[in-house]
Image (cartoon, rainbow, N blue to C red; front, side, top):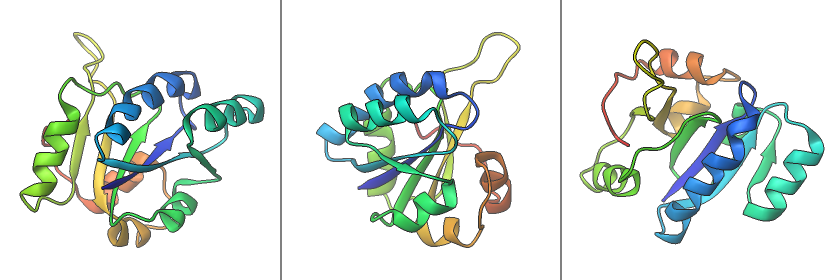
Length: 147
């Protein structure tokens, strides 16, 4: 099972679409809990948390500290998960896989799509209060298609 942390600081408008995609992961038993980290309009955050069961967090580091699962999926709010992401990430974890970069749908011909990270909670906690890009760099995660 995963704890999902959404970095909503960069593109909070895409948050509702990502939360909708994560619902299927919760139904399948892959997603245990979801945190929304970063500055988000309070009214929007309250509504999304009420509708989806997500929990607010002031930062990624705070969400890491609150997470219950040993594996974290940290995603930018504007990421759109690929079809089959539940199976791909579930299979990766079942094979004993640990960290990696999670690629979303491509951003177009010249723009690479947003990327998230799959990481052990202990490793993420050691990075401190970093945004998603710094977290990925600090952990030295190499791109591999996990979802």
